[in-house]
Image (cartoon, rainbow, N blue to C red; front, side, top):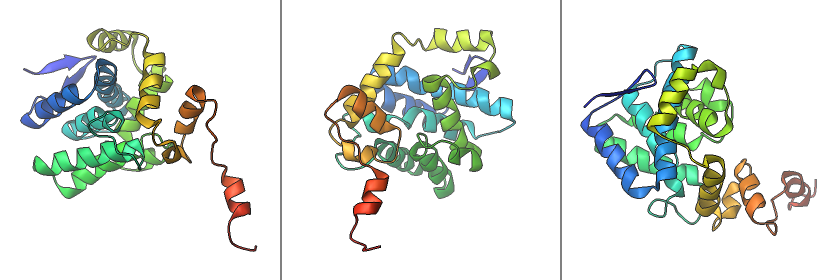
Length: 212
């Protein structure tokens, strides 16, 4: 049954139904509801900017973007964003979407913690970052009507979300802190673990094996 939330039609296809079931099984309610909101916010922000991402691809991008934090999909030695991107790529190819479609969603998920770059790529890449920045960072909230905002949050509540999402980030990355180098994710590790020693880009340059 087709569902409309905040003025956004949630695509109701075999692919999206199976995507929903997969994420519901793998993720806790905090991540699941966050992922649904990311899709909805992303589509609302894209609409405000005149972008027209493919709804199925935008849905998978939003729903899979944090799968790399979950016990089933996270690895021990690579960024959580890449874990989610790989899962989404495989899922889309198995469901008959083209290599380019799957690659755009891969990029959207892999780059969703890398500011600015996604906005110069395909709408299916940008839409994930737009949704994440709205839900986690509160960016561009003024672009969404009060009514739309209330409807989305009513459908997918965010109780104690700020603290719970930080805890989810930490749980998903604490066993691979070295993968946070060069990203904002090292802020999360440092927040929860005072003993964490960040890598220093300047120190790496000055201390490497080149004489000059």
